Length: 386
Image 1 (cartoon, rainbow, N blue to C red):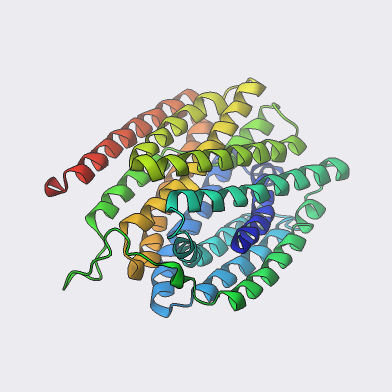
Image 2 (image 1 turned 90 degrees about the vertical axis):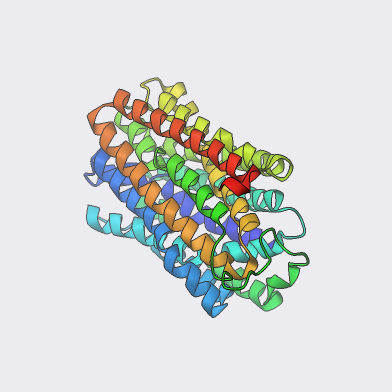
């Protein structure tokens, strides 16, 4: 529970900032393509650099150190984002905040996977994600309120986020002192835990097939930066209202995480079929010129993110042994990062070219992802044919 409070506080910080990334970059002269590239690169960094941080966490076994370091990077980068007066500085800080997530996430996910071993990983990761989203609702609403009062001044709106960031770091140090080794919660072996001579360092084939499905669905998924850019550019909402929509999307994120986490513990990967369906429907709604439809698209985007942040990650823990789990999370995140970069860049560029073309491409990609998920399930049921 205490770790959930840390995540709540830090989501307060970085989700508050992410809720206005698109309008902030737009105010500094960015086009839709630039917003898509910067947010895509940021997400790619958040995922891709875990290819390094994951194995390092496994090798050093310093899971708390990597977790704390990553949170510190984020807590420092966000308040300075509000002071950026030129596009390249703001872009660098957006990416730096995501780098902090890359540093901490494999180690943090490993710590959470240990703690959820006795509760059911689908439910455990879902509850953790739901607590994240409490902060993800409070942060954007706080930013929205300050923007409304100050006349869209980004400096105080982002500067106030230094307070929950500092509180989270203090709580992390306290928690590490109380629970130095969460691996003690692993009371039973995990699926795939048996060590085979000569193969103890290899990840299961099921993991790689599952990662391929994840890459496919994320390569056709828009970032909120592009969605919020559309909302402001088409004058569908004022800038101060965008963080409110983001907060609502994060509330939907929490509900989707809890629902799919509960279903995952009972039905397995079948639950994930809703992810490409949500991702395909999002641009159909979000990139219209009707306010309520665009808002509905943003909320559906939040539901898809909730599944990505909880159930997708829970599955990895059930596929990979304890000794390789941080490495697996790092590799999985690297694959997610590359796909997210493709998704953010693709949707940003296509937005500037043709919204109907953007929608067509996204639907096609998600149809392919859904087919790949079916193959994944077939292989899981018939391992001899894998």
